[in-house]
Amino acid sequence: MFNDLLGKLEKLDLKLSRGYENHQAATHALILDAENYFMTEYGMVAPWETKELEAAKNFADSNWLKAATQAITNALIVSEYSDDEYWGGYTYTNRDAQRTPRRI
Image 1 (cartoon, one colour):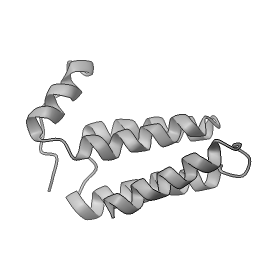
Image 2 (cartoon, one colour):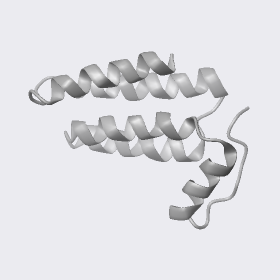
Image 3 (cartoon, helix red, strand yellow):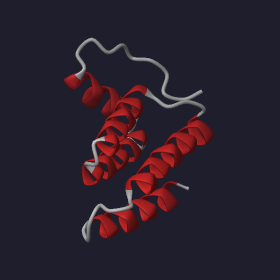
């Protein structure tokens, strides 16, 4: 499913390079697909992924669809990090973040 999501993101990004018209709903659908992937795969949406998907929602609502697809991609990529990479990167920009389980 991870690769399927990346494929959908790539296709949407290509469409967005031709214009944003009528692609806001598809972008929101991909955000939902990513959330469902995390829930299915890991039993939860971890903090960094949550932050990226919230940014994606805000970007999509503002019709900044390429920024939204980048945020979705970021969420997928960081989900693949080891715990040390993940928490090292996340706490770099979120100094008050507490290390918590990323998987149920």
